Image (cartoon, rainbow, N blue to C red; front, side, top):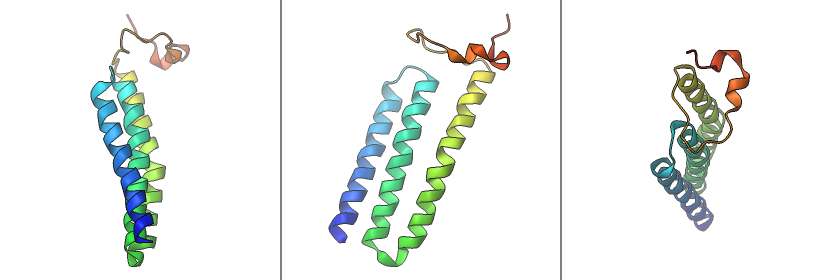
Length: 110
């Protein structure tokens, strides 16, 4: 079980590293939110569950924390992206499609 815990924690650390790398490399706030959401959610999930597997007395607490992160992290990042769009943070110049212009509340008023 110890080896499985180390592997799960290693997967989590890899996801967290790739997420931080994506946040540095991506061009605008919306792409950074997408990279940050997926990678930090999976990274935190696997890391915390791995710690729970390594220390069996903490397993159920770690699983509860991981499920909380799994549910709340995407919701909070969605709220950040929506707030960014509402205040008018522009997309990067390389963006090809902007589906948010289909909704009246996101149209930039000129």
